[in-house]
Image (cartoon, rainbow, N blue to C red):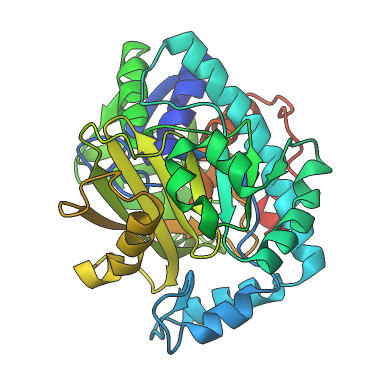
Length: 416
């Protein structure tokens, strides 16, 4: 079957790989000159079922409210003239209760665990090297009350089979020796031994090269002008480099999926949420961490990518704006200096900001809508790296008419 994949982020490339392995003739269209060059370019690097909690939680509304006069909150709301921001935000707020948060987190975890297993199979089959670090992740707490609450909250994950360990500061420093200097300032940590990390951008481009070897055609630097539909079928994709005609189509356009979907009569509850990332050179310093983790007090995540240290933070509801300035990263740099003094070259940071395609529930949108030859693989949010291999395998199975290997409850458009 001829399949056109729209988008070459980590979701699109992994989908192309799964389809090519199934024997399909695959074409991938992307406006960028290489893979994973937008949302997936500078993400946290974490493959982290241990942090599968949905953002829509009972705490979120107050955090967003405080963001109107503070700039150090993990969630930030910026007023906009875009009415879709407000309709999306209302749906998000409706999910900010304990019952919905537990249900949505459980759905996310189920997919994350399945996806991680798929990733490991791909790594074993291809031998791709991507600065992978296994051995777990540490989630740090500075405040005892927050630590106690965090430990209680782990039940939504451990009840579904994920191994998590609540540890004291001494044990946290034994797991991650880079924390030894700051262990006196910690209340405790949650250790997720099965979490891992790696360079998503590097992985995606190496996998794209493998896909090309399997016969996948990549149409780089190609802009989609429109998708033409007739009744319940997609007829073709019109680009600035000519038309693409296929038997089946996969929309893996991330934040831009709702724009293209609206043009063919499908409403996707996806909105871009901006995240900030900075990358620091380690340069042989022995104070850098080996494992990935999150400072839960400040919601700053980090991961070690070879001789680089990647830090990410903030979820800013600000539309399609990717602009940034050094001041936006000051809090992240301060947290990094405090946690890992001497662990990186803090005077030479690389700044970046990108958009996460978020759904109100935090779960992706998979499967079909009104067109019988169009499948969606989008809305992976802040866990695209973690979820991508699972959603790719699901999409390939659905196109082949097979039952997916994971329960899709909460992950179809009708559930969104």
